[in-house]
Length: 288
Image 1 (tube, helix red, strand yellow):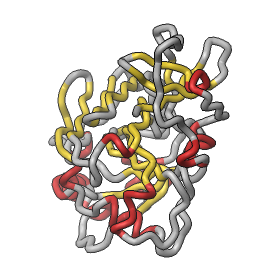
Image 2 (spheres, rainbow, N blue to C red):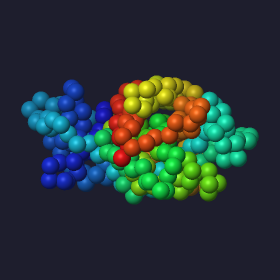
Image 3 (cartoon, one colour):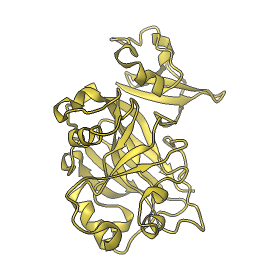
Image 4 (spheres, rainbow, N blue to C red):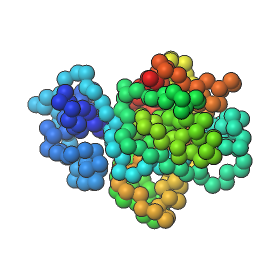
């Protein structure tokens, strides 16, 4: 099942589901929720077992899509250097910031006041950012609070998956010698276009992941190459902190980001970035 947040003409944000290649407002199926966080928090009772579009009215096209979770309940949790080839290109760009032995997973958080949706612009911040970069990542969304979860039980805690573009200001990321500021500017979390519910793919998900800039393929990999698995990530983090239902975990990006090219090729106004993950769809955003 694919779940969406969309904006009506009056500005109100509602939830939708894709059925037979059309979008339907979830309220038509008796699922009345203020937002996606409320739906996720309701757990198994949130959606009817069967969603039959017969007699229901699909949404008029085109539909303005928002991020599936426009306002995440907590900061997005992120994995750094979680694909081997990306580790190599990162160290080549800035050895002090990205190099060295890393036997443990690298965690950081990304502050989000509002996540951007499909078609929303990526701000370029002239005068502040001189090295704007993209990172296509598989986003994992928790379906219930997780604390002290064993690796073999992690799949029971996952609500679904989405696409995250972990937009990054490399000059801020390296100058401050930490990643929070350079990852957390407003508009730096394009996300979507939907949530693919966990029952749609085997666990752990092995999905093709790609990113193009202005039609040029830059990233082309598979989530099978994650260094630290989804099960290990959630088990480790939940040993000492509660991960709330609705938490988004960005699992890291493969090789092919702008800073890894020779010479580096950073985003500029007018560039269009398309992030794609098999089974989920494509996320389109243009730099302004």
